[in-house]
Structures are given as C-alpha cells and as structure tokens.
Length: 79
Image 1 (tube, rainbow, N blue to C red):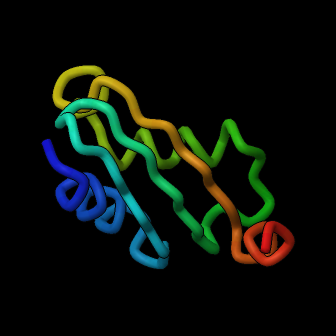
Image 2 (image 1 turned 90 degrees about the vertical axis):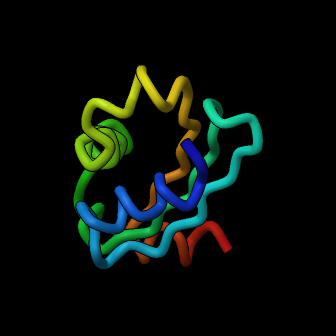
C-alpha cells in the first residue's frame, strides 16, 4: 500500500475532499483530510466516514492511519 492509493480511495468516497497522505513504510500512514462532508459532524463521525472509504484495507493493507479531519470552517480556525 502506498499513500497515493489511500488518497485515491478516500477521494472516491469523499470527492469534495482536500487530502494529504504520507507514510513511507507501507503500513503506517498519516492523513489530513478537509471535506465539506464533515460539516456538523464530530471527530469520531468524521473518522468513521474515512474508514468507510477504505473498507477492508484498514487492518489488512493499512496497519495504522493517523488522521486529522476538518470541515472547511474547522480548517480555517486551525490556520
């Protein structure tokens, strides 16, 4: 597994998302995902949405994924 494939999987499920995925060992990754779809949802709900886009890859091809998820408004507050 590589970061680009993970990005493509997330983009397929969250097409409006701005996504950065990093990781160099093939199993542990970090991602920052900004999506309008996250608006009005808490962090757990946002992460569940991302996990859904990855399906059975989580726990098999992807051992660990550290995520920072934001709605556009939340991201603006982080800057």
